[in-house]
Length: 429
Image 1 (tube, one colour):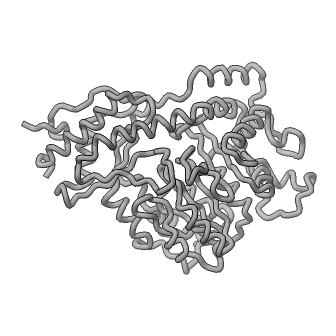
Image 2: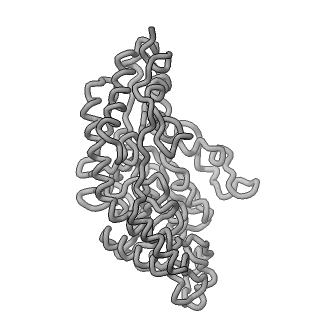
Image 3: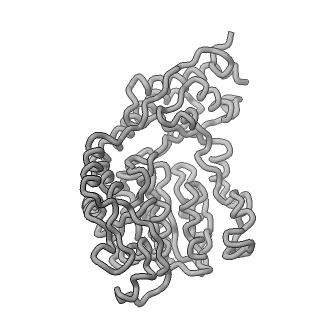
């Protein structure tokens, strides 16, 4: 008789995992206060006292800047919008090249295209999944303007080596830190390491306000340019006396008073939420260390990880079972997360296929039916980032069953599922 659930045996777990409920009474009271005041957004798209938003927005930005020890924090309606503002603020122009990661959410790589600049993909590190400094330097040309670095899955990038490359070639660093709040590199917070840092506040991040993003910088000029791009720059520059009109076509990327009020309360919870992730990951890893074909994620020396996702490597050569079949067996043993039932069991393959395999890059079509602004000299062919392809296609397993609000019993079910499938691999061969 079969033991594994995928073959008809009993499941390890038959109830949903607990929801990641970070919104509580504090947020409800803060929202109620905004509603009672009657001002849901106070922005004006012209040069006036309210160009910078209402009281909740401005107070939240001050609190965020103080929390992270930076000079400026600028809120927007999403981290995607933040990337667009940052790309415009550094002065990208048509034909400029920007080094980007193939192993991330697509906006990190497509942001340069908003300004008709060209994404150039560099490979990732095998151990840490962030941009590989050696390949970054290989991809730099006379047209390279910036590097959009990503603190992927909660891991900070190789700051010393990437910064040395940027300094050597005179490049800006935009740090996409959507997945790594309170991660650190030599004691300094991720998100504050580059010229501009980006944070995300959408619903499946460490903290959230529904949808939202934050940009941080110590550079006064970049901060003001991001504020302009956020809020109809072209309507403001004349009255404000702005003479550098590069990328001063603005957008409406403004955050509402309700979202800002929620974020102010969420920020107070961030430290505990990250500490819980670290504690849960440590518990899981301690109890999976005797499974020889699984390798737990490495943490860069001098860094603290904040575990947006827990990623591990799987060695099919040791099991004789494909990664796909192993993950399907794990999924069959467990259950989805409450409020995310339609997403299935949150154990998956590879995290993200290489972004350059998407149709837009394969066909080099972004605007209209031409290849503009893509360069004929830049390749998006298979094989340009072999480490990323190897990790995505055959090695990485990731899961989200280590978030806060998981009890010890919940974590034990996850651990039990891994051991059960590992002990009955013969059924899958």
